[in-house]
Length: 320
Ligand code: FAD
Image (cartoon, rainbow, N blue to C red; front, top):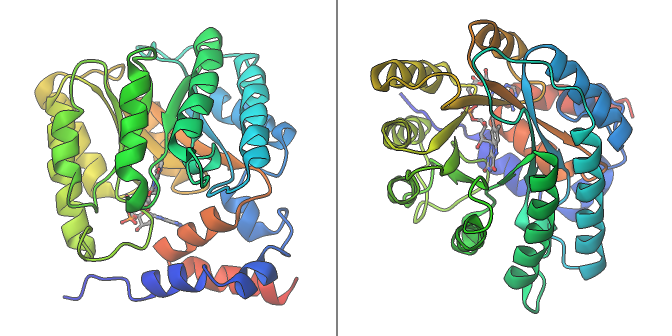
């Protein structure tokens, strides 16, 4: 059985074309295909969606969309938006979740949006900007998790997280199971208090660094999951795939992990019924909710994951 998605690398490669980007970013954020995955363009749109999710018994992790900035002013503007976002999220009511004491509100952030790719001192600037966000988040009882981007950034991103975890022990990181290195990273990062979000990985990566077949990626995910669930940290099981979701439940039962010691995470707009089912069963479920006008990269990654979404997207393009 061939278990590679042949369209995935093609869609991710085509997405890098500036012409396609110009054509597609003309689609309004209100178009169904964008709205399915993105909460809206503004913080007001986002706060409405976050409130609804919290009232439904789920938790949220909010991403202000943007990545790969090479402009210092833009990185500073992103920091300013995150500070306002943390303020607004902190003001939301937090409905009680039985048996779950962790902060229900989190922000997710890409270091490349905070300046990591700037030509001079990028990683140091991103680290400093992340420190500013974490300081504010700590005062507001909001968690922060650092997203994983393409493999050329993995070492620098994990170095930043390591550096700041001394001051902010609750700072989370994302690991991508498709990378060959990740099982080792999981072993190193499964210590007390360590918050690791495990996902499969969404970028176009070469075979030298990443598994290419879906079955290999799932197998790696299961190995990494076992390391994290048997470890002493706080695993965040970020997947919509029923296989890892069931495996996490089994490992939690085996190791006596209650709903306050790990959580499921899914993306806004994907498997909503499954999110609600897990939450109703008493599990901690967090929904990753993006907002903002820079939705192009995020949306093309979602399309590449599931080619069925592409037809939906092309229809939106034709009717624009
Ligand atoms: P898959 O095998 O891809 O999907 C399983 C099933 O889920 C599919 O059969 C389908 O029913 C459903 N599904 C999955 N994707 C879609 C979709 N786009 N549209 C509709 N249905 C879908 N990746 C990174 O590289 N870095 C990150 O920082 C990162 N953060 C993430 C945070 C969260 C909370 C989540 C849930 C994912 C994140 N990802 C990140 C994306 C992740 O790497 C995968 O690309 C994505 O989750 C799809 O993998 P899957 O585990 O859901 O399994």
